[in-house]
Image (cartoon, rainbow, N blue to C red; front, side):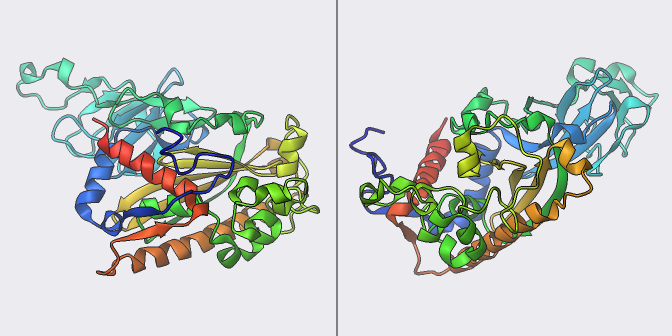
Length: 389
């Protein structure tokens, strides 16, 4: 898109002209949902979970992406492999549990007992009849490309050839100073919210709602209290350019160091952060369509978004800490996770309100305010994905 055609171009970040939101039906129509599964979720790298949750050879986890069953196992050599969780015999699900340890280091179908090695090769068929009917070249488990990025596992169900780096919106550098691969999950939370997956991402990409919906967060991050996320979201930002206060430059309030109930750090901070990274106090990394991180001076929050239906989304959140934090009996990590869990609960509630209102037969589409430029970019990204051959 040329600068002239881009309504977000220029020193002021906001939209320069009226933009419509997506058609309302795109948030509940089953046919649209199926199209988005095929062209977005099955052709992009989707975040599954942390690699260290599948720690030992023979251990596994299962996932569902859209309608697709996924199995991730660690083989005898310690490598992680991903397959469709589907037997090559008649298609039964191989591992129905969310996680476990495979006996005898083989994957055995619970229906007819076909078994597979951990590299996906067919190992044994118990039937004594007609062994010559089996073409072993066509009986491997269906392989899914899997990549480990700093301890976070991503799968590409469509094997589209799209590079993993294309998922990160070119902002992995924002968390380059955090030792992500060395962190440990200290708390997990999973919830279902009754809204389309796009509604959650729209909410994530704007802060117009923050003063009304997030009083605690808006107190901690003063610029959010103004309904904006960045200094140049304000069309009059030049008038405030000399002001160093967080309400104009972003960052935490003066007495705070992290996202927690009282704003205080948990004590074991990451040593490699710059002074500016500490001043700001929160750094986002986004991997569409399924994952984002928020990195703080003492912990990192990882959120996974998966679609469950046209009007239902699963949100899985993990709070990651240094080993020293979790080993320190004097540290109460609840101060960190309870704060952001409250923010997420507030987001979930308004996302559900948004979904319920979209069913109005008079509402064809919405209108985007200037501050919603990242919502506009999200819509442009989605349209490009749907149009991609």
